[in-house]
Image (cartoon, rainbow, N blue to C red; front, side):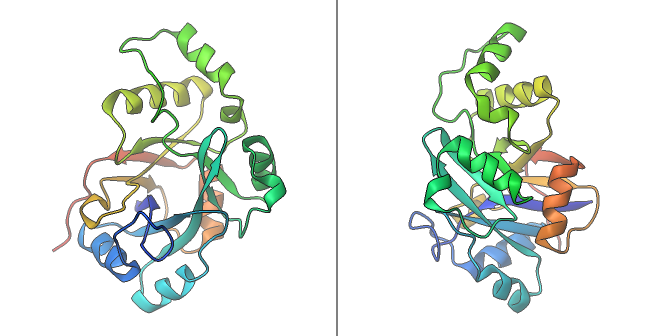
Amino acid sequence: MFAIDMHTHTRLGSSDSFIGPEELVATAKRVGLDGLCITEHGFARPAWTDDLGALTGFPVFGGMEVPTERGDFLVYGVQEIPPSYRTWERLCEYVVELGGAIVPAHPFRYTEIASSYTLTDLDRVIAEHGEFRLVTALEVYNGFAKDLETEFGGAVARRLGMSGIAGSDAHLPPAVGSCFTLFDNPIATERELVEALRGGDFAPVRGRRVIKR
């Protein structure tokens, strides 16, 4: 099994983060992760993640958290999003066309979710969110998500027959590894990561990894 925090930020690429890149890696190692994705806010994969992985000897994968009118999307396996592809539908089509993976980030963060829901409620939400039928997976565990958001996101993913990922959304060191995705096999490259995401051989985990001494 291979544990990757799929959603992190550094102060080098996200103005609201207070973690340095090397500090992020050191923290990931300390909490027992096997790798991490740096998903900076914006429209381009941070190329310096390649050097960071080589420098630290730790699996570091580059991604991005892309803003759209339908919320933020985590993108893996794509270098850059051109201006003409920055609406949610065009973004999904573009990433899929290039063979990447795309995941709605914290899809229910700013929505009103009832404390109880039925299959009819789930079907209504799915119908209102056409992007859910175009994406690779859903982020069902996020380090800053409330319990009800998490429960509802998991129910939507199950209703769609879709896998879920997890990421801490860390902007501070203590958050790193609070949620992570457990893959069946080791991941060495971003292409392997994308293939694993598209294959569905992973599971989201909420809670700390066992700390390595």
